[in-house]
Length: 118
Image 1 (cartoon, rainbow, N blue to C red):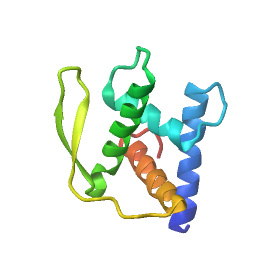
Image 2: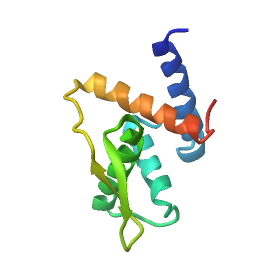
Image 3: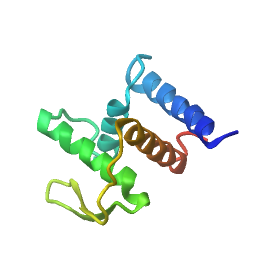
Image 4: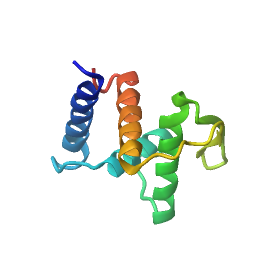
């Protein structure tokens, strides 16, 4: 099986599983999956978030997801428990489709590591 086909199958498994657990079966998009990862990484699951918090949650997720690729490194937790990352390497300039593939690959790897999917 090609790497692209394997990524498609694993991405589909992630989306289906998350959609059934968090969206009553509605299909979650890439941004929604990133948002859920941000909530998971923050660890404050049962609270409401303001709009600016949601942007921060997505930033946390992106940093966490791209950390294994060498782009970010965990730095510290602030007094509210929010993780902060420092940039190790600037992200390359990618087209929208390439960005999407990078993020899907990082998300699939995240959920493989956490044993959410196989």
